[in-house]
Amino acid sequence: MKMQKLVALMALAVLVAMPAGAQTKEKISNRYSMELVENGDGTYSLKHKDRYKFIENFDEVPDLLTVYEHKPIAAKKHYSQCVSEEYVYKTYPEYELKLVVDRAVSNKPAPFVVWIHGGGWTKGNNNAFRISSQFLAVQKGIAGVRIAYTLSHQPNARIEISVEDIQDAVKFVQKHAKELNIDPNSFGFCGQSAGAHLSAVAALTIKGSKAMVGYAGPYNFLNFNPTTAHDKKRTRYFHNLDKDVLKAYSPVHMVPKKNIPAVKLFHGTGDCLVEYTQSVEFAEALEAKGGEVELDIRDYYDHNLHGKRSDIGHELLMLTADFFVKHLK
Image 1 (spheres, rainbow, N blue to C red):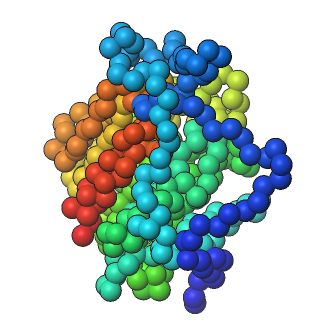
Image 2: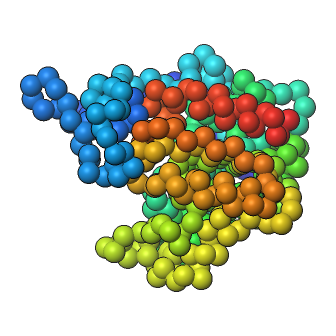
């Protein structure tokens, strides 16, 4: 039985008129994606200076208070011809989950990458990583699968349910691999922040996974609190912070003895949401089991080091693309 296609579009730029006042002013940042605030006299200051605990001397940071002109991580001409299709891959009584397949430009079944959005396990959707996914599909012949998954505010949400969602998304793609011109046996994962955590869990537990890329992810919940005291839904999502559950879903404690996927980790020392030491710990855990891991730590860069607010967004996309080409093709 053929799957039902919800959307089939050429990924051309579509401008939707917004009501007056609906647009929000874009945040000002420096090249490290640190948010800046105007002082009213033509100068700028760091908005959250006290949060950058790993930066000992701010006077040594180049361009710290210089506004960075945000740039896309790739030119539209390099991905705009991508054909994208949306499908419902899983249905719950109260909601349904959708994934978007960015079809690879390939004359043979293509490997695929599952792109998993961040958002603290509380928000986000399958539009995240659109440019990255479509770029790899068009330029590298690697299909993209951008997924939505159960979030902490949804009915009966728990971390294990989100993990099962990702497993089911992979099964859906593998089941329909022929229709999608996809190689069901060559796949990897990529995510940012909470999405990097889920990507790591998926890569380490789903049989056949070959590679994983993580941007600024938390990988050891015994050293990182995934929620806050006032966030009751996210606390419930992590079983009221039960230590056994936190350890069970910490990638540093999930590395198998064999068949470890290749891993590449990006993190900035200026990350004020997830300490860069989380990536260091994960890399060490992988290496201890004989895994192949590339750890790329960037001085001063904040949490969103891979996006348009960072001057290395394009560079990290190229490094990510090369890594997946090496391990999936």
